[in-house]
Image (cartoon, rainbow, N blue to C red; front, top):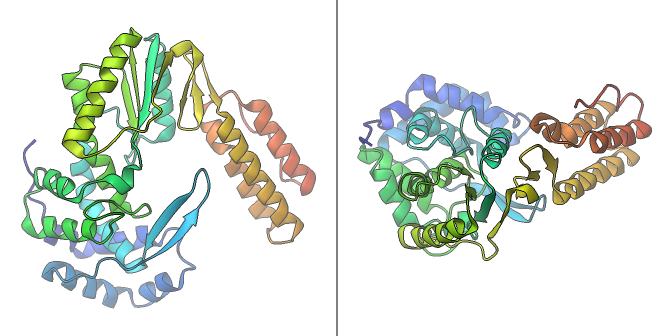
Length: 346
């Protein structure tokens, strides 16, 4: 693909920076750093624009915290000003990243996402008797900075923009020369872009048309288990040699009719069902809501919102979990008036 000539002037354009500030503000209005930034918006944006064009913008100001759902992860949240910078970059660069990805890559893309990936996986499952499920070991922590910078230089031409990318990448390292932080917008897009070559290798070289990827979660389908064993060997070699990555030690091959555990669901040719892990996670969330209600820490409206959030994914994905969702809302309705009103949808 021909390299694009986007430069720092596009990132630092005034309209682009104002749009970036509004995007960064979503869900962050109560944060003190966001309120300070927006109080003097024009002055802050002028300062950020000057720093971007001069190549002196400060990178790496963030705070870290740990989440435990669905598994323990260290999240690195950039300060508000840096969030604005990341949005400004992706406003102009996201279409370039998107054009380099195959149709069956579903993370961090407009019109794609987790639910679309599950539906595509189910459609493919109807066509093949066997599947291979694999994912990358400690993916974000394992991304090689030098390799990522080289891949970016094949897509972008402007030296100033590439230097900015390089500074953002170098600001975090899980080990020397490796790792992207989980929690920043640029990291998500860089990480998705990093595996784009693997997608094309599977589709164009190995000729596996039955393939989907959601970030580092991959699934491949074929007519025989022997074909998938060879495919696993080839993918492992590509990831190791080209990208410095390793497959988790528990990839598995099975018959499609037995169901593929993928993105919180079990994917069968005829339907989707919530995985046992997802059910446990939703029950934990429900108990947390109940405890907050008992302590008087959550309003009725907030209970309604949180309760609906617990079941919304299952409803949107169309999984067979109506009874589970009904019980969830009924349980909440028993704790507060009107919470479970209405059908959860089928």
